[in-house]
Image (cartoon, rainbow, N blue to C red; front, side, top):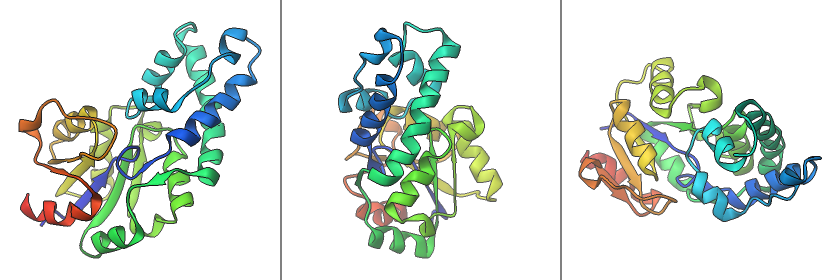
Length: 214
């Protein structure tokens, strides 16, 4: 039996795209540069960048700025976002009963390409903190997701895990980290290399059955 489950966050455990788009747009409206203050971040924008590292997102959203200024502006957006998302949240893809059942036999973790404080915002809004042993993000390591997965596993003495995510990037990171991948087919992304995917699930309540088959 797979001892641990490591979850992606956006598109796997929840969808906070509306709240994040609103939070970022609020910050951009406050900027003096008209080229920036006129930008409206939409839910569709969020879907296009979900799962990417934060420096990649900054380059996509603010191509008119140099790299340092891109990250300074994105940091302002993220600082406002964490508090906003903790209060307004998003649509949860997992209910408490599912996570409670999974946590009876396995340790649960989260690894996401997000900033520090975002996973905590999810746990605050959802109330699911007691079901997760640990979490780590891009903001902690400033490294690719595969590195962050291995760091979290090392920190927790985890030698047998599977990663659950919804995008090709999640799939690649999982295999680069040397662990099985389970595709959350209900999420934001698709997988272009299905032959490499160990399993696919249509809802999290099917995860236990899928893990038992790995």
